Length: 93
Image (tube, rainbow, N blue to C red):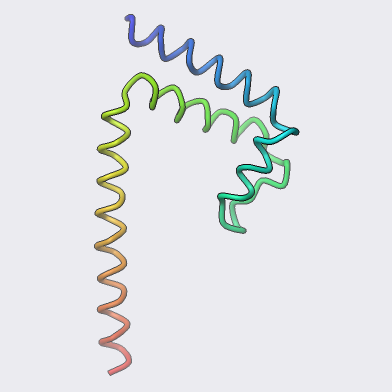
């Protein structure tokens, strides 16, 4: 129950401060990091604030889980890139 309460508090605080600073920096920061397809251009404010609050709260409360997910996604991405590279070499030859 304590972990849940800490997560809720972190979620609310991150969401509040991201919403408060959306126009002055959060939106521009997201647009710098995201590819063109996902750029916010100031739209979808509450969707992105919710996503940032969920990721931030989970990272604060359960950092090892987030680290393991990132490592797993990196390994999957590497395997997919290698398979795509291998398949493209097979097609051209």
